[in-house]
Length: 110
Image (cartoon, rainbow, N blue to C red):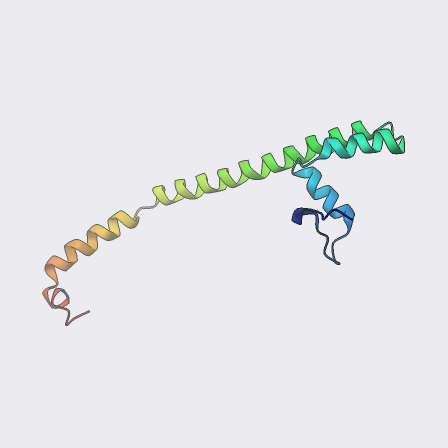
């Protein structure tokens, strides 16, 4: 009887096994098992160097993406706080305007 593969490794017809292996390795899933399989059974002596450099590069790329998103969000927040009129000013203006605009306060005006 053949053992069923976990759902994370089920291959769709449009995805090649190489893409699945590279995705699994970049997330850190069983990369060391693949490296040992290549070294032991196939005799690839440079498998460790390949897997190690791939993991280091994939980790740095993911770290750079996370840091870039954080920097972009920080810059957007700084730009919001540097505006001359922000949402707090608009809320205060609306509250003060409602005290002068009696028609709108009764629901019959603007």
